Image 1 (cartoon, rainbow, N blue to C red):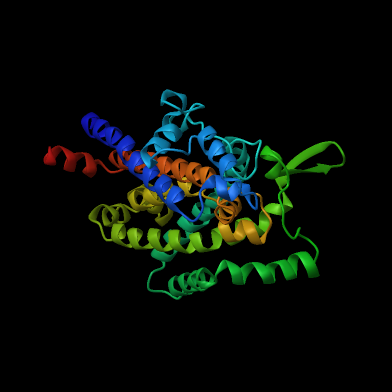
Image 2: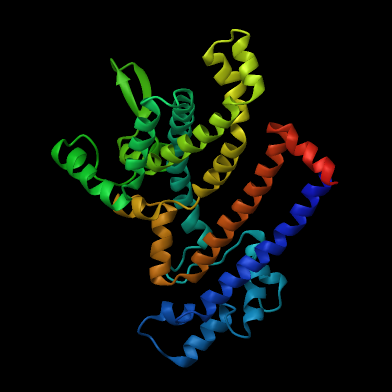
Length: 343
């Protein structure tokens, strides 16, 4: 097991190097270099060349990549370099570093995405067990077909009628935006008698969390249902029922733990996915998250911002994949047995 983990860790920098270099090359060979894009209408060749030299954008693509990756450790480079978490300064929003621009927005998207995941798995897993338990009755097709119908509705179709109903007609939810910085964007305070403070979800959360979670609930429920149906046919489940154990106890002690293996994969990558943000949801609801900012960065060709977001998400996915594979061995002993046999 230790050898497998070490081998995977050794592969991480190799994969990240390939991803970062490919993204860097696409950005540099794309339409317009960063300096020309930032200059706008200004086209003095001598000034542009001097700025390219100052920003480390002269020389071959390999030299530029070396400066971006290693910073002042590379000849002609400056700053800490992306390998040390310093992604430089934004070409479009001058005076702000890339880290300053993406940190706050990624935190907002992570908060929103995490709440959506709580709703997705907190609702999807019980629904999956319910439909598996009542397989063959009207409950199973009714629940699954209802969830599939909601999943089939795209975000661009769901959000406008929700805004019309809850924000315009009923005026009970804000039309968009974000509640505030940090945890102020998640919780509001409801005072009882002006003495007791009760934290409640901020009103800005209800619509985006619903939109982000409705499709995931159906996916998780279907996945748990399929796995649970396979587990219900196992001998140890029939033995537990023969001993007189209640259906609730069978579901909690035997069906649920043995149905978690495929769900762990979904949970792991979903946790990483919250860093990406939600492009359409954040844009339509005016949420200043990383998804909306990514679209703005692509439209304005803020290449260093695009590079930073790509590298951060790729790193998170690789680490999540490793953690998921390790967690398999703790959830299902058969994975450890298979590893021992292959060794």
